[in-house]
Length: 313
Ligand code: HEC
Ligand SMILES: [Cu+2]
Image 1 (cartoon, helix red, strand yellow):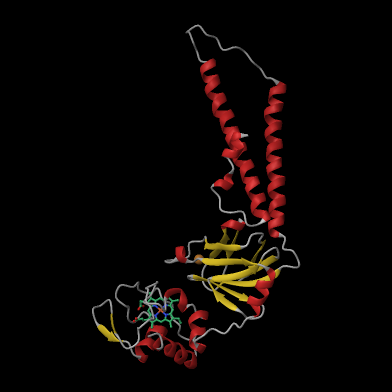
Image 2 (cartoon, helix red, strand yellow):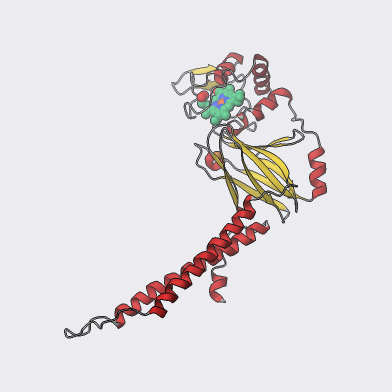
């Protein structure tokens, strides 16, 4: 039917990469079409009756109508059946979305201003990117390191809040190979809109070899801290400014502060910038956005991250 194809929401919805996505779209189409039909009947009926039964002369008398049982039954019963259908359909789909298969592969997810971190059972860690096998259920066990975030994969039609201090979960079974977007859909601060990750769906064998390959980040312990403590979210290594200045070529240059003073970037300045970031603010960058890492990094960690920054020539 033309109106069904018109309403085929999938034409303006992203790819359906899971079975749930296809079912979700059908339910959505049903809701959309039934709402459109109900709207047409109501508004159309109203316009029709308003013109048909309008007062044509001053002598018109309103006819006396008490009721019509059949009509009243129909206009109550038909919507009731429709609403119950929506309820049962929606409930069973929601049930499937929330019931994690017991053989699901688990991946830990951390939300943080402003990146997604993924950690596999074997310790493999990644930022803003993760890989899953096709045709296999995957369970995400998620938490946040700071504020509320929300994990959303449009092509899978799944979304779940990520909350500091507790775990929430989400599961999916990807049916299509390829790369899919992950968004944060809970406004979580300045760079919320850049909190994006890539989800790669690959064949099972490829996934297993990928997972087994070494997880060592090149660059030693400093690189580890750069990734794990989330510096990566705000400081690039390629010279492009993110929330904060890039670490590329930072060491040894003179940095301009917002009060007009110039500061030489040496070890002590780096140390102060990390432990007490609000003492000096780099010109052109927001104040009080960088969290203080006081007490979060040991002396060894500080040395490692400072050496790491020094190496970004
Ligand atoms: C939430 C974003 C954010 C995070 C996370 C963050 N920073 Fe920053 N950082 C900034 C901003 C914004 C500035 C510039 C404003 C200022 O000086 O406070 C900055 C400034 C700096 C500077 C001074 C740079 C210069 O060119 O003068 C250093 C060094 C630095 N950060 C190191 C770190 C390290 C190391 C980490 C991780 C342990 C880190 N930052 C994590 C946002 C961040
Ligand atoms: Cu977020």
